[in-house]
Length: 214
Image (cartoon, rainbow, N blue to C red; front, side, top):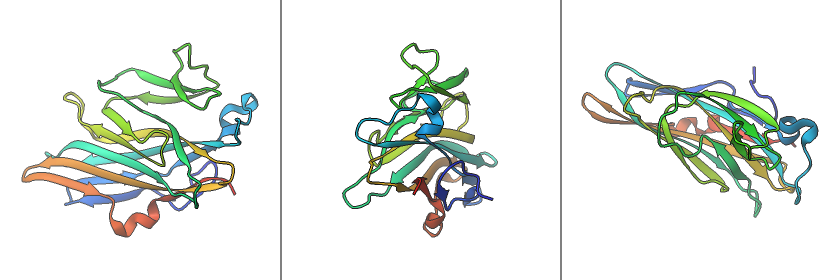
């Protein structure tokens, strides 16, 4: 059964892969909402005709034994159609250099950008409870066709378990849909040295997801 709110995708169930039988990494099924679904009656078509979609993404890391995950990169790439390009308009989490242990609630304003709802400038029209955000992370690629969340380990909290991310995708009016491809790369330290785990080439076809609606 496809676990999607809107649109199509080939990633129907979490895709799991292993690294030397010491780490299991999995990418969860994406969820998707269109701009009108996000903002309801407050939504007005933006100037220029671009359309916006909210993606909820997730991955899980399960190291075993004395394995310590040191970093994890999760990337989304949007394929062009001729000269037309879809872009990652905004993303959360974005820049975070210290661990947070308080629950975070996001707002999406009429400009289709994220803001925490305790900020007066957020002007939240719809909210998302993202729970507690712990690991140190930064992003690369805002307003580009490829964006990566780069997580690094925190001295107090291990980089394991599930991580959830949100991205707002902007499609130009001539693009009805955009093909998104996901990548997950994990670095860890084991008893016999460094371990690197990444999505197998043979599984890439299962990591494609259609953003938008035809």
